[in-house]
Image (tube, rainbow, N blue to C red; front, side, top):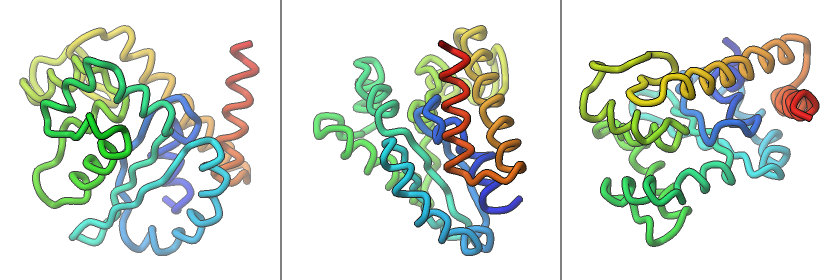
Length: 194
């Protein structure tokens, strides 16, 4: 996959404002070939409070955290989520920026993977806790994430994310840039919902 295709495949739902964040990896060569695109796209996406954070790992690959700041702040501000993050050692009393910085620090580290990242990715707290307790066992459904709670709602979200990615990938293949594909998806989705 090209750099642009990897960004769409891994991050379209966050870039289109329907998911608080996406997390995916990319090999170092692919990143080097396309990193100049990020510089061009950042001003366009930052106007919509959407951001890319590439984190270089010790094995040479890049872990990308793509997020919609407004959606992610809402997720982190929910009392049950905030309590959960505090129990995991996140500095919730210092505000969203401190919580985000802590997550990025944990993702960049080569220590144990922070499974609470699922909460930032928009997975229901019940599913995040279920995976922590049971690992890959006892789930009701497996898709983008393992579902331990409300299957119907989770499947609906997963289908929405999948559809967004497919539409944006199609638009990219038709010649649109990543920012234009995301913009066209948002305009089309808004039109269909009105």
